[in-house]
Amino acid sequence: MKKRKVPMRKSVVSGEMKPKKELVRITRSKEGEVAIDPTGKMPGRGAYVSLEPKEVQDAWDKHILDRVLETTLTDDFYQELLDYVEHQKARNELFGNG
Image 1 (cartoon, rainbow, N blue to C red):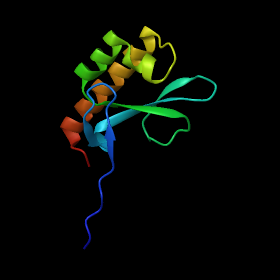
Image 2 (image 1 turned 60 degrees about the vertical axis):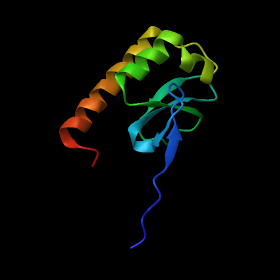
Image 3 (image 1 turned 180 degrees about the vertical axis):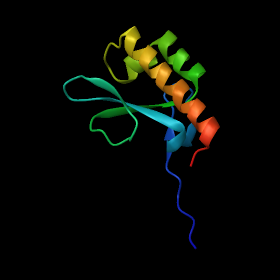
Image 4 (image 1 turned 180 degrees about the horizontal axis):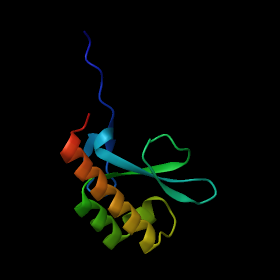
């Protein structure tokens, strides 16, 4: 059987390429709404961040997502993203990446 190609994406914080499943996508729609995109299929400009709480904290401290998505994000959004990443990381540790 032929091996399937694993889609790779680049984290906007660390700059390293990782499998798409190890990253979370944040989108900005044409209307300027920013949202966490767990499916990776929402329309709009996307930016990927690793499922590591430290990386999300770095993005928050340096406002990296603000620059990449060309908008101003609130602390509430960064907190929501941090909570989401911590939850997903704990879930992956419990159940694996399957």
